[in-house]
Picture 1 (cartoon, rainbow, N blue to C red):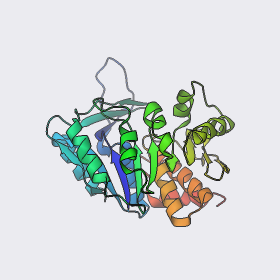
Picture 2: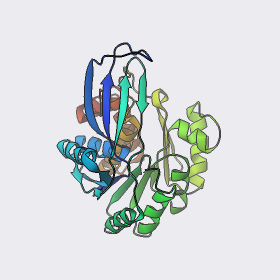
Picture 3: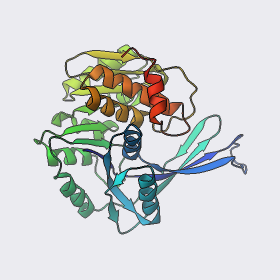
Length: 302
C-alpha cells in the first residue's frame, strides 16, 4: 500500500479575478475549493492513475472535516488524526494573469498527536511506500520527518521525501528511496542558483552522496532530471503546452513517478511518467486526470 503524510493540510480557496488591482475591491469571476496539501495532491493523482493510497496527517475543526470529506469525494482513503483545538488552515489562491498565494499557518499540533501518528506508521511493512511531503505546522520541529523515518527504519519501507531545506536534509542519513526537490529548493540547500539541467545534475549528485538513493529534480518549464541509484542520469524537457496552473505540479510528478515505478520497475519509464504527470497538471485547471497524463506520455520516447 502507498501512504501519504500531509502534516498541515488545507482547504485551497481558488479565486479567479480577471483584472486584479491592489488596494481596490475586486470581483471574482469564479471560485472553487479543493482539498490542499502536497500529500493529498499525490494521493489524488495516484487515484486518477488507478493506484490506491491512504492519507495520514492532522486535521482540526470544521475545516478539517471538510478537507477529509473532499478527499474522500476524490476517491482517497483517509486516516487523519483529529486535533481537538484549532482549525485546519484555509489557503487563498488568487488567479489573475499571475498566481498569488496566501498560505496560512494551521493549528497547533501537540506532542501527543505526533506520538499517535508514529504509532500508526509502525504498522507499515517492506511492501509499503511512504510519502512525506510539504510544509509542517509551525509548532512542529524541523526534524519531524527525520523522526518519522527513524521510527520505521530497518523495515525496508520505500520512503519518498518532498520537502524544503532542513526538513529534507535531516532525512538523508536514513537513505530515503527518493527525494524530489525542485530547482529552487535544490539551490537554496547549496546557497546557489540552479539554472540548467547540468547544474541540477551536479547538485543532485551531492544529495545522493549524502544518502538519497534516487534524486528527482523538477524544473518547471525546463523539465526535470533524475539521478537513479545506478548513477544513471535521466533528463527530460517539459512537454509543450499552455501553463494554466502551477499548484500541485511537483506533487503530480511524484505520483507519476510512483505509478510508473510500480508498473515497470524501470527508472527511465518512471521518470518520464512523472515528468508528464507534472506537466499535465500544469496544463490543467487543477490536478491532472489519467488521460491527460497518458496523452503527453504517448509523445515521449519511452
